[in-house]
Image (tube, rainbow, N blue to C red; front, side, top):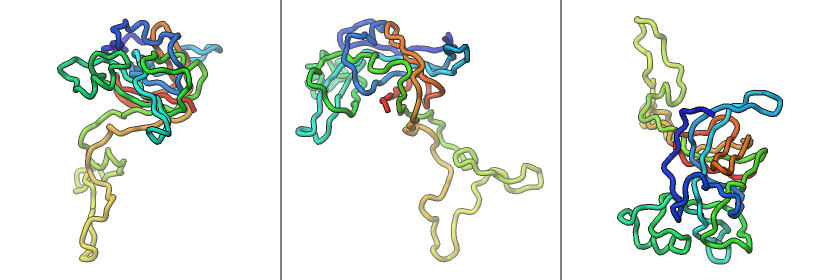
Length: 234
């Protein structure tokens, strides 16, 4: 595994160490959340090199059970990484008290699924929710690239590169004639690029390392290092 991967600062509701983040004795859900550490490569059973993204799962605790009767849909809310008291509101403290958090949490997410009868608030989420060979759908936020021109943002061809050309990387004509006398909605202009929610389907889980809280998924995952990634079974 590559040495240049780095782990985000972590912490559980009870201050457990990072090494036990994926304890196998927790509850199993249809998906989990993990942080992207970087990319590496591993060797498969037949000796082929497989490019993988390394994901680190922190301790996640069940903080609320949502039902169709009460909330209109079924889901399991989970929380991770405790906040400091000075950064927490009374509402956060009251909501997460039953889950074992003294204050609020930096991350509160949901996994849409039917709520099992034996699950309770405060239960630890197991990294064994996913197993080697599972096919998952991955959702994360892509890298933000700031304000970019239309050439890079929309892959425009641009004009000739020779010195005599007066048109190199400009957007080109954007308006109309006297009628309608305006720029039509949806015109491709320069603007903010990246930092969008991106979903990739049919991603294979290459390996799960429960003792280290590590998951390896095949191929790249959108986002920079330390981006929170959602993985849901397909």
